[in-house]
Image (cartoon, rainbow, N blue to C red):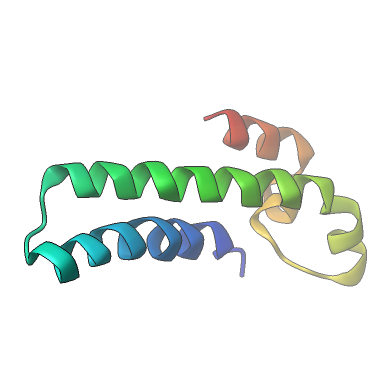
Length: 81
């Protein structure tokens, strides 16, 4: 349903970073949330650029990624933002 970017941001960014900080230090400082957002954003950027490349083949086989739903132009704008 095109939610890969959301799950990547949450689990590769926030859960991994903030969760590790909590397990190690039993607290949730603001810097861990910022680091989680940075890591999640980088992981999402990699996913978006890979999905941008795959739009024609994903569309042909019926995959419904966010890039397929947005189309080439809007996916490029999403990547920049």
